[in-house]
Image (tube, rainbow, N blue to C red; front, side):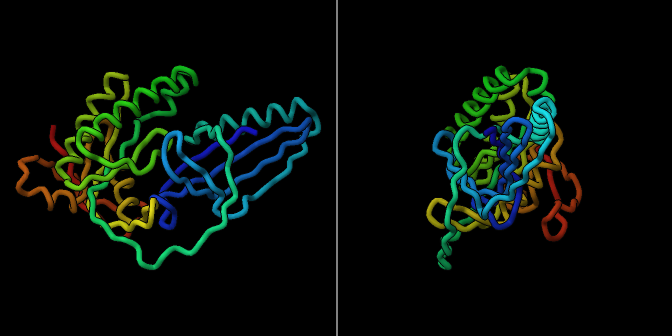
Length: 263
């Protein structure tokens, strides 16, 4: 059964993200669909995916094997175009437990990296070549994170979210990642925000993650954008910023002034 995963901003989920999983199976002329919200724990080979609630299911009787096959191919292509990533492992059922009310609170600079026009590039290169490029991409990103002591939180298909103790380190890391991935023919957009989040074991939650993702969504290709919260912490750094005005960030309370990090 082909399975796909898409991670998007959602207030209540682990790592500040919720994922939607979508599964399809064809048996003769009948299509079986399953989809729903999932939680994602860990990264890389250690990543585990769990259904948050019992998934929804649908059965579609196409009448002929050819129609069912065509339906499945078109449905899978739509998921790829909507930036779903294939999931190799299983999606497990998981009983939710009440979280401890005494979560540990932390303050960090949050960095969100996203590849510009990734769907177009993937379609042009093909699955095999794109998989190789993505392997090099994540290797380059993680090298810069290690150099500047960033902590990877979660990957998002073609993006990555990380935290830094110091905003200057996050900005330097963003610039280094941008230059490193250009050698792969990739352009990224980056957003940074400083704020509090809460930790319980290996889980992290908080509105600050949503804001970081929304700041990145406002960036143009090759830009590093920061929120006013980051800029206020950088008054003595010598790093120069260009005012990009006040923006309403989708799904985020109030309006935020954003700044572009000058090259």
